[in-house]
Length: 175
Image (cartoon, rainbow, N blue to C red):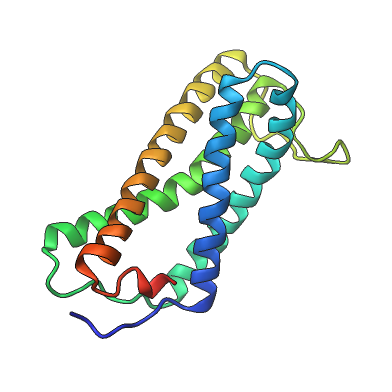
């Protein structure tokens, strides 16, 4: 077992803030996909700025991660498990950045305005209007959202495995 070393305070704050935001975003996305009534538009007005906030925080978090040290995983973990943990974290960062960008690109390709705050702050389009591209990006956004949801479930499962079964300090290093 390794000596307990925690992530930096900024890393922990960003992690838990983004965890709440991403879980909220995933559930909003599910309700948006299942709703065709007036709730849909209310959910969209939350979904877009929350997605941009996640994008900004993910970039900040990635920069923080690259600049700060990370507590090592327990020595007794098999190398394959350590590589899987590293790969899953890289995928999480990739999805936290790609998913909002794909959503932004999808709205741009659809020719939709992208309001962040009411109608007073609009994001510029990042892709040209193209219905075929919009359709492709819409499918990609859905697939990436399911991938993120699945990866979050695996991440939570791994955290619980470390915290409840192994009790090796990995979960405590992020609290």
